[in-house]
Length: 537
Image (cartoon, rainbow, N blue to C red):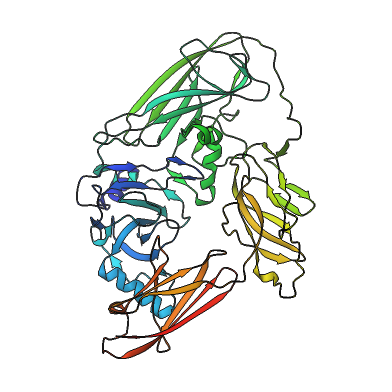
């Protein structure tokens, strides 16, 4: 009965494009700080391909410039899923009109429209957009996600589009890495190492990780592994099926993978054991979290089994000879501090406090705070790691402000920046500015912004008004505009400083009369600039 229900459910889904699907990326691929949350569908290297709804439902959200998605459409389906279509060049006229109605109704230039089931219902296979290259996209393609509507967990779109995707190529293992745990050794060393053709030796507790990729015919891309199993002497010790990823656990990819190895080599070894602070629901292991204990002087037979969504399978067996060796217990390096995974960590020194709550690191993690003295600045600069050390959620960082001898000093203009000058936010309280950070290798200090954004006209003729808006400190936060005192929409044009008003899409009719434009923009420290002018339309 269950198989019949599943068959009926899958039969209601249709492909998002009208040609054979070829993938540039699959679901769950490890990326720095996140899993790839969907399928990247090729659009033959060009923009403008027709994109279709994959099932009946309604357009529940339309966004522009959010989450790196560029132009994006969310369609909620009665079966309990929401499909998300990203990097679009443009929306269908019906969906674009719904976005404009929402913006005018709420008098907001921010393009994030939340719609009701009655606003824009759609049918499976209905045209909704043209493919593009907007947002954090480096080449034209469709990024398609499917979320659980109730939990917002990311689901593998493959399970809904399986019948439309051809794949007969199995995954391939490139290399296997042994990672000795405290007190364990591999080939006589406590350091991690890759397996070679020679028979390896081990003693004590050792974890393993695998570097592997999946492939498909007709494509040069490589993809993430859908299913991984590790057996020891015929007993399964680790099993992963990457099919359901909670948004709140996205950054745990760094802890499941060997992130520090990726930093130096740009290849992902994925661990076949579970670090104590990792809670990814699709990882399963034995009572030892997948870590193998070599405690008997004999040969241990291990085997990896890798499968893709189509069931194409690769098996790789190897032998490890266990022999007793003196077990070493490496001591902490001099001056090195540890972030403990199972407690709240607090680092306090004169002028700075960092709190890393319980569960923000996956295992006990060294960090090495460094202070750069800046006696003439608003604060010293603080760095907590010498190479990238991402946390699994935002941690509060507080820095004390050296108040200048300036009567006009305004504490609401203070904030924290990283070494690249990126705005990190900040709230001032009793001499301290507090913001939230996820990367401990950043260098953080106090900055001050009391200068409003700059507005420069680019074009005030024809059917399109164009302004350049820049802010080189805290960055643009909000903007709004009126013509003759009535709200009108200005769009922020991606990857540029341009803000544009499409007069043909507005309420303003072309009569040849003169109109007054008022454009108001504020940065993240509430510095406001008002630009006023007249134009003829």
